[in-house]
Length: 441
Ligand code: IFM
Image 1 (tube, protein in one colour):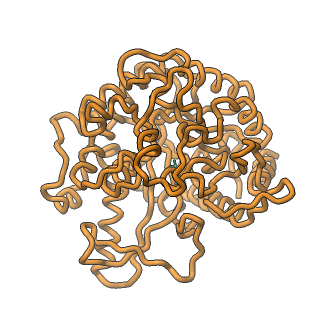
Image 2 (image 1 turned 90 degrees about the horizontal axis):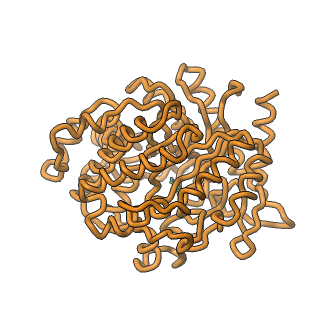
């Protein structure tokens, strides 16, 4: 494996999952505060009120990132910290926090990658319709402009949204994430509005930056048929369309995938004239989040895309129950490059939840180390095949609040003892540090 000297290696986090300080310095609640406190749907009943207390420990956290040899760090900005009601008055203390964070990263030679929306919609906006309402897209663009005016080109890469598929599907169809709805038509309308917010947000970022790299972060997955039947192959094709093409084609080609649109029938979203042109903005860089593949068979009893998961008996799985399938990362990189010819792609998230144990001040996590190594190899193979991949950011820097799973899943390359807030780099983090150093030689 060989990566060029300017390749970025680092790790990712998101605001609600690590910051804590939920009621400090003018921050108001987001849909996740409400959901975590009141839905009864968080596995351990926990909230992000304290999380990793990063809001108070950000200096030490940046120093730790530096000590691990990373030259990039991806974090998200909490909209309810910066514009607590979602629209209107800016909260200077909120922006100050990210301003200081960015400066410290830069002082350590770490490129800041900032995501503007990682699922924490201000509750005030949700009360007015939230993502079901077109106005929220314009509020997002105003927020994007405010952030870019303050942080400007000190941020290396801005992403408008993290995983709009997940916000829309898990939040509005499956009900496992905030705001906990279960309605396919609403999920598709929300997806459309998220993409519209991305387009308007891109315009706002473009108008307020000169050299920062602008784009979006999408979760991606290849789908493989579990058997050779035509029905299962069709289910895999359709599932790929629902998961990936539904978002990539509007954003990169300016239209919805017609085959999938037709299959949704009366559930399709309301699309205004000009929306798709707004959504399809030229981006500088696409972030992809890759964890696993889909392995499916046809199931007539399931709603479209009629695909049922099949557990592959020869595979290994993470603590999330996700199949470890590194070649899917190479496959997706090559396919996205062939289909859309984007100028740059980076891995914005990739990692594994494991049942880690802190023993004698150490965490030995060889399965996670192998996971990182095999996925880095997949990135190197994609680069060798001509795909322009510029960065690999592991998910996550820290064990953190894993949404509906609360604190029961550990994704960090650094262990967090939530009682003492002590951070301990796991053996995978030390392996990655040495791997990066070896690449730099
Ligand atoms: O923790 C999440 C993250 O917030 C978004 N991508 C997937 C991760 C693991 O589930």
